Amino acid sequence: MAPTSTRRTRAALNSRVTVLACLAGLALSSPLAAQPLQILPPKPAAAKPAAPRALPLPPMRPPGLGLPRVAEAATVQAASVGAAAPTVMEATRTAPTAPVTRARTAAPATREEAIERLNAYLNSFTTLQGNFIQHAADGRRLEGRIYIQRPGKMRFEYEPPATIEVIADGTSVAVRDKRLATQDIYSLGQTPLKFLVRERMDLAREGTITGAAVDGDVLTLRLEDRSTLGGTSKIALKFDLAANVLRQWVVVDPQGYETTVSLYNLDTQRRPDAKNFVIDYQRKL
Image 1 (spheres, rainbow, N blue to C red):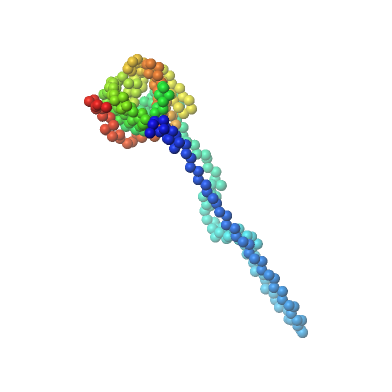
Image 2: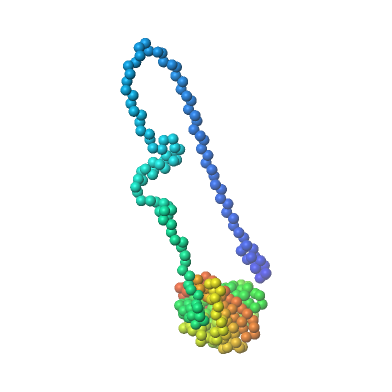
């Protein structure tokens, strides 16, 4: 299947929406039939008046007399509970609770505090894996999996139709292209993303910090790295203050081309397979 057809099929599958309809039935009960009156013939008059007798007092009025059966049942139930403790619903009505609020991490007040916030996050894990979405300078949108194991190991595994793999084994970075049957090797220190695989992170030493800003819950830290291949690269790191996680980075290479990578489904607990970081320097593609 051609790449265009694959993308159309994937888009069609993603656009489907399942709608569930629920039907509710109503049970109707018929009213009770009215009871006919009994008319008795008059009794013949007695020859002699009956002797007067004492009439008993009427019984006490039952509670809830004349109320519907549902209300009567509720009355009986309330009477049976007596002085028991109030139910959860009653306690909720009588004692209002304060609204639940989620604690929000305060935004850094200075550039130094912003750098320390990012350093603390990047140094909090030694392994990481998750999904990424990459927007290239030519408008292409690529997806895949990212794997990191400190120090020095990293892998970008792209989904089809992309044919590229990027692997760092602790010393070098290999960029493989299966379609072109090429494998290019670079020094890890020449790549702009070497900060992701440092054993101990200190962003202030990775390059020149050019700015820091907070927009809502997103902290953006900008720096320049003059040691990358071909000249100076500009990097913007976007950190989610509420979730305490790195969400995105934007790299502008020495030629001025911009690449944006967004991260999601990050897992810092599972250890990636060591085979993900092996470079075959003699590989023939």
